Amino acid sequence: MNVFYIEIDKFKNTHSKDFLTSYADKELKTDKRFYEYTLGRYLIKKVAKEYYDIADTSIIINKSGKPLFKHSSICFSLTHTKNIVMVCFDKYNCGIDLEYGKNRNLKYLSKYFGERFNTSEDFYKFWTLKEASLKLADTIEYQHFQQFYKDYYLTVVSSKNRAHNIKILKVD
Image (cartoon, rainbow, N blue to C red; front, side, top):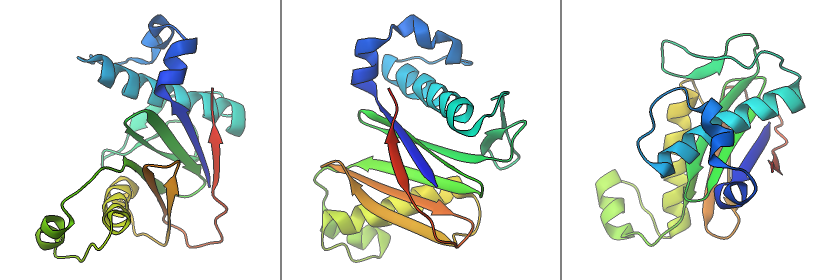
């Protein structure tokens, strides 16, 4: 399973907003939403072409609301938070979530979710797994959690339990 990401601020410094307009296939009301959405589409299509040799990167939405390639069996899942847009690719159904860590009321969250969160990492492991599993829309057979950079927490899940080698690659 490969994970690719873009840092939004760095991308904005090297590319004009006009460059991304072709990736906006719907109305996006705020600049923040514009960059998250269009950079997500850009990242998915760029990686599909350059790493997986997918010529037609047309995306459709299935009955469950999950995006997939119209003409390829390669699966992908997208997440964005704060300054990062990230996508995972696999030959099996996958899901991903990345969250920027911030101070949380762990006592309240423990009570609310009926889970015991002793640390922020405990909470983000729970939360990113919950979000990634929603994107998977399938039975979780494999899960991977890690801290990404200093303040981000990442979970990827797959519908196949096999030896996953998670590679995280930056895209410019």
